[in-house]
Figure 1 (cartoon, rainbow, N blue to C red):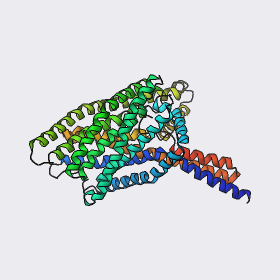
Figure 2: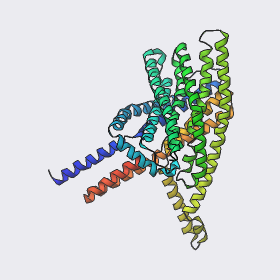
Figure 3: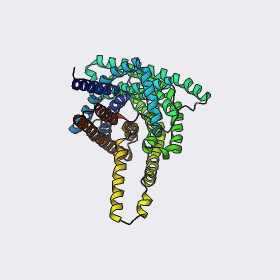
Figure 4: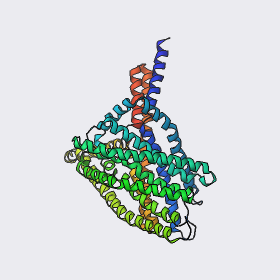
Amino acid sequence: MSDCVRKRVRYCAVAIVSGLNLVDEQWLELSTVLCIYALVCRKYTWTLQAFDFDKPTSDIWSSESSWVVLLVTVLSYAGIFLLLLFLPLYLLRLAVFSRTITHNSNNSSSSSSEVSGDSSNPGRHVQQMRLVGHLLVSVLTALSNFSGIVDIILAPLVADIMLFLWKCCAGAAAFLAIVAVPTYVFSAMRRQHPRSSLYTVMFLPTVVASATASDLTLVLPLNEASALLGLAYTLWGMSVAPVLSFAVANIRYAIKNFPGSAHPLAMLIGPLGALSQLTLSIMALGLQSRRVWGDVVGPATAPLLLGELAMAAGAILGLALWAGLLAWFVHSHVLAIICGYRQFRQNQNYHHLQQNSANDSANRNTVHTTWRSATGQYLLKMPVCQMTYPLASFTLATLYFARIWTSYSALFCSRFIIAYMTLLLLLVPLIRLVYFVKQCTLGLIRWSRHGSFSTAESGVHNSLQAATSNYGSLTNS
């Protein structure tokens, strides 16, 4: 076999191995973001129908906006396809290469300590529980989205399968939450300063499971839906205190350490994810409780009263929690803008460029070049999932708040956040795609000119790593 053929075979092997290394939890998080963004679009049209009193309200998007239907359908099936494609591969890799994955996760956690705001290195079991939490959140989000894009009433078997999957995920989430409490206490007793964001991920699936249960009640018989609501309230009640405690700890840590972070905005809005899901769950359960418990036994007084009480409690708790979310959303962006402006002045020697005005045009060009370079590098390394998931969760909570309280201000706020998320999802991947193609092209050109395998290997590896590195996590982990 000639040297040229060996080099080509080795180059193909490196490309395949690099591709397999990309099968990690970031693809699951990408599928979660696609599903939750489609869910936001569907719930937005559902809320709009509630404000239009001339048309019947339902959980199906309006037939007049065909482009919304197309967008939601494409994003939903794309997210479900990614989940079904990478879920078996990820489970296989987690089972076979658990030590390798844990080692890589520890390295990535230590390398991304600027984003997470904590330099402590969690143990192996804590990392594995965090990965399981991400997996449960991905599956539950896909179930919640799938219940709205398919007419499951005509296919009872599909509804039974979804209910079985929800029970499995809810049981695993409850077990994960129960295990997380002694693990955190034991770590705190050993004075290891456990990272609260990691334990937030362990309690997040229980909250997401309760929100998913409210969507599944739309496609289940009333008796099964009533029992499902009882389980959902149990999950919400067991997770409300830990989620609030860890979210407050995350907010305090973010306020204290965000000036030194590479992505202060991602660090500041991270606590919005769990708190928004908590707010969304109680309001969604209140809405569905009034519908389900009011129709279980007809005009009986007790179920009607119970449904109205659940609706009132969900509305009041949702109002209190949503007000705190809105205050932190505005405050985090103000802090991020101030921090970004200060970092730009310090890192780019802004004072020196302004004072050294011997050549004003050259200094002006230098300032513009420096600004473009800093902006491009910031967008290239922006953790999209870490920002999109909290924003989408906050948008869903805002839409439910607007639906319950008939608030046009909340509806306008949700429009602004949807446009914000859309710009984020379109701009950042486009910049990364251009950078990915550029690095691949440069690597292949250098390999074809010089015949150096090390150059080609580094080019392909850097391009693949740039396409997925720093993509961010669902929370500050």
